Every structure is written in C-alpha cells, then in structure tokens.
Length: 355
Image (cartoon, rainbow, N blue to C red; front, side, top):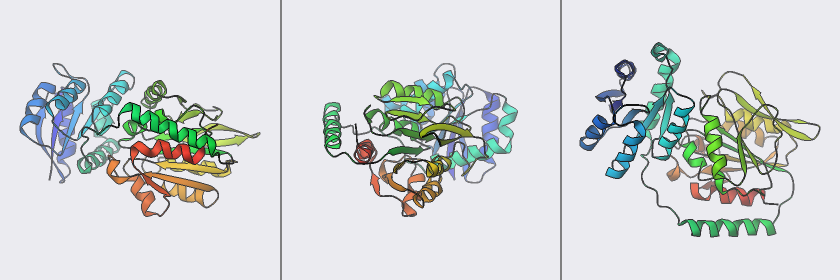
C-alpha cells in the first residue's frame, strides 16, 4: 500500500483528498500537514510514496518547501496542486523545475473535487507519480561545453542540408514542462522547420509555459492561436482543453483547433496533431515523443506513417520522469531513435537541418 502525505492549509481540502485516497485500496494517507513547516518535519523523519503539495500556504508555501527539501537533500515524489491558473501557473512551473513531478488543477469550489472526473484523474496521477522515478540533482554538462557541442552540430547541419519541407511535432505529458526546457531552447532560430508541441496541461497553464519557453529560446515560442500561420523558426504550443491541428490552405499551413471529446484520456491529444499532418504537403514529419504517462502519440504516429515519410525520436527510458508515452511508441516498433534527453535537440537539428 502506497503511503501518502497531504500538505494543504485548507482543512476541507485535506478532507477531500483524504476521502479520495482512502477510497482506493492501493493508497493510504499516512500524515497531514497544514503548511510547509509541518511537512518538512514529517519529510525529515519519514519516506512517502507521494506528497500532495498545495502551492499557496501560510508560514512556508509549496515553493519554499521544495527549496528547503533541496537544501536538506530530501528526495520525494511531489504532486503540486493549485486553484489559480494565472499566478498559480507560474508558481506551478517553478515547482516542476524544483523537482515536483506533476500537478493538479484544483477546482475553485471544493464540491467539484468530489465529481467522478476529478476523482479518477487524481487517482490516475497519484499512481503514476508513485511509480515514477524521484527527481534528483542532475549531472549537468558544463554550459560552455554544451554550447560548443550544439554549435558543432549546427555547423554540420548547415553543410549537410537535406531536401524537402519538414515539420517537427513534439508530444509530452508528465515531466514534460521541465523536459521541454532541455530541448526547445537549444533549437536554433534558423531551424529549417516549424515546431508543434502538445503538452498535456489544463487551460491557463499553457500560455505561461509558452511564455517561459519563449524567454529561454532563440526561436519564437507562443501558445498557438486559431488561424496562426505555421512558420519555420517558430514553435506553437497547443492551448489546454482543445485539440491542435494543422490545416493547409493556398499552399500555406495554419493552426486549427477542434473540440472533440478527450482521446487517450487527454485534451489536447497529440494523436490529432500527428494525424492532421497527413493532409499537409510536408515531405517529412520529425515526431518526438517525450516523458509522460499513457500512450498518446502512438496511434497518431502509426496513422501518419501509413501516409507520409516520418522520423521518430523517443526519449530514452532512464531520462524520463515517466516512461509511458515513449514506451508505447517503442513497443509499437515506430521509434527510429531512442535518445537521452540532453541529446534530443541535437538529433532534431540533424533530422531537419538549418537554413
């Protein structure tokens, strides 16, 4: 039975989480904490299979607790929870950078947490986080060494230009926001392709992630809007709660959203993104599937492969927070390369070339 620590200043939310967790025999609530100070004392003494951590709390908030855990060398698998989709989105992304594995958007009204949809999603994420690898301090390649290696890859790509019109399509889920920061900022502005990104996130969080990636990157990164023209050197991150497609009109490509039901249990679903490329005149699609639970991307890539030339890169197992989506693609025999996270950007550059 998995032991869970709940950290939330709201007694009502602690009770809501308790009732959901205790309804499933796989889990047991081991302790409650009303703020980060209490939680830190528990974490110093015990190990938990997962920690449910509120963002906004008195005395010590969720971000401060993660920083204290890092300073104390405490490793735990954390799910952040927040009701705010503006300021809370920024703080949640900070939390993911500090080692949280996933996040839940709490409904503003507690009675909505008792609905079956929230109940099922919460338990699904809780199981995934319990089974995931804890995020520990990473062995970083020195910045100058990394820049020199990236520069050499770009120069090589310039001299060995491929032919044809290409597009890059990235899918990610649990662990994705942090993983994307290891890939997108290393794509050069003169990349010879546009970039599409489907990251499983709720409405309100994707704009913040796009802004953060844009501030870190040479290419222009934006939350894709209906009717945006798809251009080389630009990345288009799907908004939450809708399915991203690319449509072709008069020789140009544009973003289009659809409102079909969730597919593979998610919305946006990468399968729609990949399948929309079937009717576009790209000569090749470079499909990248990164960390995340479930199997989103596999069916779409298979359907795309039946109609168009593709090159598929999956994130290597040991560098995934959750080896679910890449595993599904790997097991389907669709992956051309299984690549460690820090090398994905380089392989993308080699696959599409630079201008």
